[in-house]
Length: 193
Ligand code: 5GP
Image 1 (spheres, helix red, strand yellow):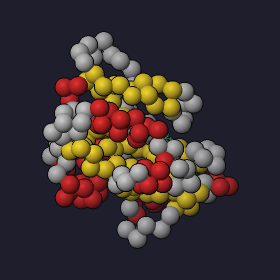
Image 2: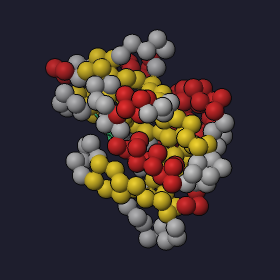
Image 3: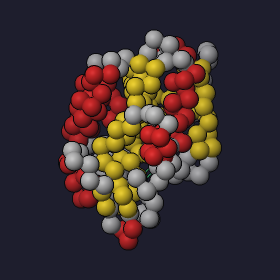
């Protein structure tokens, strides 16, 4: 997605050979117009898949997911990283090792919000080693729902998550794939889109 790559080039801050900071439009401040375009792009890629629900992880997955949900006309569920006091009834739980925080945490979704009849699109902001995506997918599986695929705003192609998910037969659509962050430079994979 050309406009997303341009924003990453203009506003992305390469923190190390493995970490990209995009706090000006995705991870802290949010650019609603860019999010709308991202939502439209996800919707167009998955429009034939009969999606009934989008499932993401708080907090940075919410903005692109809501925009995709608006386009597809489906609700968005975000997994919580803390079991809030209001999450009192039955819930699905999965363990996620955080790439950025270097710790393992549980994520939770109330059983009310995903059922075996759902066809789920999983969306997240970044894909690195795939732990976050696998945690959400585990919840989709616990609900016995159908997984239509995974939509990622920025995939770091030099880490293994995307490769492993695709090898296990899961459809992964990433709007920008970064090949390298070496020397502070962002190099994209050519995607012909
Ligand atoms: P994974 O679970 O695939 O290893 O990492 C994906 C999760 O870690 C995403 O939900 C995202 O929040 C965070 N993450 C991984 N790499 C980066 C990065 O380079 N920059 C930012 N801002 N977040 C990242």
